[in-house]
Image 1 (cartoon, rainbow, N blue to C red):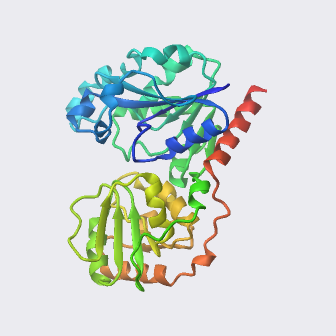
Image 2 (tube, one colour):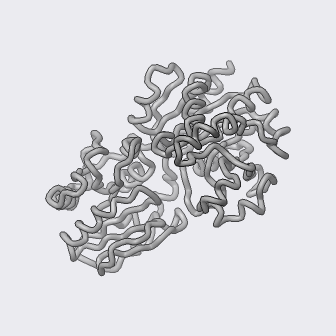
Length: 371
């Protein structure tokens, strides 16, 4: 049985199901042993009240946990990790210390790393483990799945410098958006591979969770970068429309046509997406946010043939996305009306593949490299 180690910032049993959860599942379904490593977690995370501490990460720290047959979770907890200290002086003074992050003891998984066939890194400070893993297992293949622009996540400079140095050394640099593709343009190992989805889940029938209504149900699913001003204006412009906000988005406007659900398990969000009339990708801008043109949510909304409303800085070639200028009530109105009037049957789902199909591409690449 082949073994894959996925190094991510996510926790296996989190309510938030990110791409790396689905990659792990896809490898497992194809017969691989999977070790899901949660990294960039330390006492600095405790000080910052990291959302992952809502889960038993401290109790499970540095102990291999069996989640199911041949699938393991490992929380690599360290005294500190490279983090943006929000001070130019402190960030400068911490450079030498943070560069040592990859040298912390790996604990009980180290022997397993020596017998691993494939390492898949996510865009996190755990990139500083790359050299260490290469030394432990030079025969393995290495993939960098660049889920996020590290600049958007405001990572410490040692993480950005490490990414720039090691990116050409991966067997494959897999990026899920045109924006991130441009950041690595020119590297021979670069492939644009959009997010996959769990087609088996989205293809199921679900009971409509919305109350019967002749006016549109508009849904947002996410956990960060929310454009509060958009919701403030849109909910006033369309007082009869229902706006459903799913995710840990606090301090929403108090209006009868705004329904807040907080964070739901992933599968519980699917009926809200499938039965919605319009989807929102209404994100406030910060440097690097351009990568959200091809986010997992965009792919999921598209697969459910939903018209999408997004800010103008997320412009793409998708004909079913309608744009507004942040803060501009007229463009918000026009985008929502255009989305309401769009013929959903025209939204193509042909170029959307499952996570299994993405994994199959990777395995084919690996077999070619080792031939």
